[in-house]
Length: 180
Image (cartoon, rainbow, N blue to C red; front, side, top):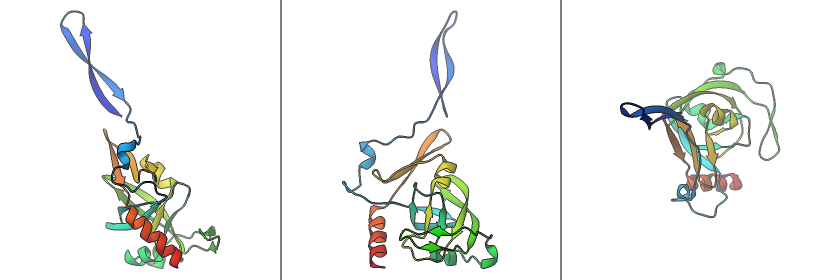
């Protein structure tokens, strides 16, 4: 919530200032499409910090309930099998295959100025993405994402912050997935 001060009329001493809570609005407009190639059907692929490192090729999937880490990131963060917590539920991949996860790990994710602890499921499967973040992460940030606008917005203190996606990276990931 942001706070605005609005003038009010005082009976004896002129204008006074009243505090008013004005909610921040998370919205997208045509201006948010500036810099994107339109029309498109690209996924929202962003960069953020995880475990203290900048991670590229992060897909934002608001249709999923599970945050996923793939082998490249797992190895790149120097994680070990004993860092993992057991995770026994099988997952179904994009191509319909059942995947048995290696385990789960909790890691700090920094988006802009906000840091959120996220439980990632570690899977041994090919992906052009380093990780997939889903509704759990979006909800923790109170974020709204838009693939059309190639942006994600979230409240941070008294302002709205945004993360801009990379259409070129999204397209590279799509080609890599097709070729695989």
